[in-house]
Amino acid sequence: MATDVWVLCEHAGGRLRKIAHELLGKARELAGRLGGRAAAVALGEGSGALAEEAGTHGADVLYALDSPALSSYTTDSYVAALAPLLQRERPFLLLVGSTALGRDLAPRLAARLRAGIVTDCTSVELQEGRVVVTRPVMTRKAIARVAFRGEGPKIAVVLPNVLQPAPPVPGARAEVVAVPVDAAPSRTRLVGIEAVARETVSLTEADVIVSGGRGMRGPEHFTMLEELAALLGGAVGSSRPPVDSGWVPHDYEIGQTGKTVNPLLYIACGISGAPQHLAGMSGSRYIVAINKDPQAPIFGVASYGIVGDVFEIVPLLIDEVRRVKGARRDPA
Image (cartoon, rainbow, N blue to C red; front, side, top):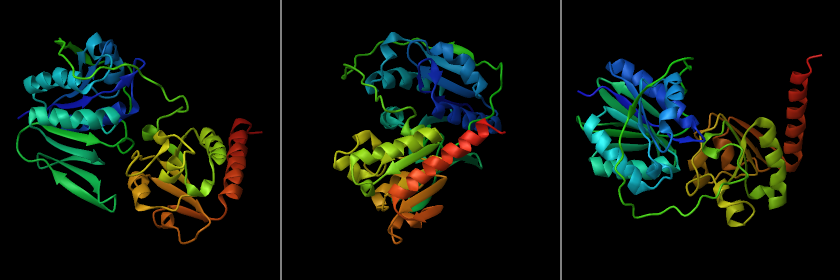
C-alpha cells in the first residue's frame, strides 16, 4: 500500500504560500503514522529553489516541475504535468489548498486520475487505515464526516486557516527530485495578470477580517473598517449588498457567492447575518458582531455581540487598539 502523503504547494515571489505550510504540517503527521514520506510538489520556473522552505515546514522530498511553460497557471497545463507524475508515483493522499487555483485544478485532476475527492475539508485524519475528513454542508449548518473507500488515489481539498502549521525545523531541507515536463498544448492562454492593489493580506489567508454590510450606509464609511483592519494586521471584506450596490469591489465579498474564510477573528459591522453570508464566514474561530438590531441573525453565531451603532462603536475600537498598541511600544 502507498504510504506517502503529497502536498500541492502554491508559491509566489519565491516563497510558499501560507496554506502550503499548513498542509505540509498535516502531511508530516499523516506520513509519520503511515511510515511514509511527506512530499511537496511545486510547479513553475524556479520551483526547485523552494526545497529549504519546504523542508523546514515538514517535507522530506520536493518534486519540482521546473518549467517556464508552468510559470503561469492554466488548468490544462497543470493537469497535463501533474497527472502522469501522480499516476507513476501513486501517493496515498494528495492535499490541495481550497484556493482559487486549488478549487479549479483538483476536480479536473480527480477526473483525469479517477480519484476520490472531497472539497472544503476542515480536518483530515486517519482512522483504521482510512482517510476520514470533515466538511461543512447545508451552508455550514451541519458538519459531514466523509471517508474515502478503496485503494485508489485520493484528493482532499482543505480550507485555509483550519490546520496548524507544524513547528519549523531550522536547517531542514527537502530532497529535490527534478521532474521533466513535456510542454502540452493548452486550450487557454494567459493574456495578463492584474494585481489587487488594496490587498495587504489575502482574505482567504487573513487571521483577522473586518467586514461590512448594508448597515455601513455607503462606500465612504468602509474607510474606518480599513483603518481598523490595518491596525489589527487584517483584511477588509463585505457581505453581498455592498458589492451589489457598487460600494466595494466584488473580491471583497464573503459568502455563498463570494469567498469562504476561516480567520481567527471576524468582526462583522452592520451585517444582519443572512444564511448566504454565514455560509462563508461561520467557520471563523471568534466572531464579533456589531449591529443595532438585537434580533439580527448574526448574533446567533457570534462569540461576542455588541448591540449598538456601528458608527459609534468602530471608532471606539480603533482608539482602544491604538492605545493598547501604544502601551506595548512604550511600557513606561
